[in-house]
Length: 312
Image (tube, rainbow, N blue to C red; front, side, top):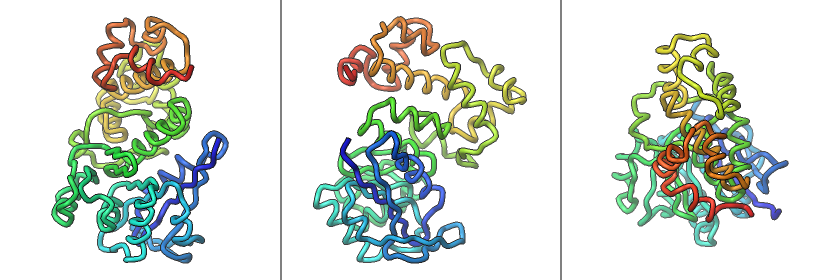
């Protein structure tokens, strides 16, 4: 497996949550081709949006050699320097993959990388991105936008969605799903940003419901209800539902459905099971039920998906 060099570029005012996402997802040397390095404009201390500083040992030379450059979100009162913009523009011109999380899209836009492209950012800053960079076609509702060589995501947990999508594209669903399980995240989420606007707290790995979500992921073949999840978490049904939306952005049953569909994708790619067997293994019951939900969330039928992505 060829080595793929990933540079995570921490700009002044970097958001620690956004910074941690690519380091966590792409830092797994044992199962992926990625070799990930944290870098800044220059070696030294970088101030974060949380008010503390951190030491970064590598400068822009790492980004210039990288196959993929990821720019996490940062406080918008700190503008990227001309040197950073030039490094991003030159990397784009060389055909390198450029990725942003949340407000990192502003750095890509300042470098001209997003000119004429569709892109997204956190819904709170979408109007500002469109106003400051009118040549960017801002998608206000997308969780992430895959433009091939340039990819952008919305805020916080959408960065997880995008990073897992990149791993799935590069390495297949099995590796992406393994990482998703490790960080107790939904391997795939449908819908757009509008369903998350009223959320008050982004999902966190050490959340109170992390154990319950991990428990559910291990039992997708069995019927699971909100009452089952609530009983495992030691909460009432109503409290469980409210906290589930706060932590994952999805109601419990919708989260279960996306997890089941993603398991179906993995089985379609790597196992020689019939569609009937896969429907049963995923807890979806009938083939008709699997096909209906699969087409709605993935955009194609299980059979067509298998023909395209089956590893055999």
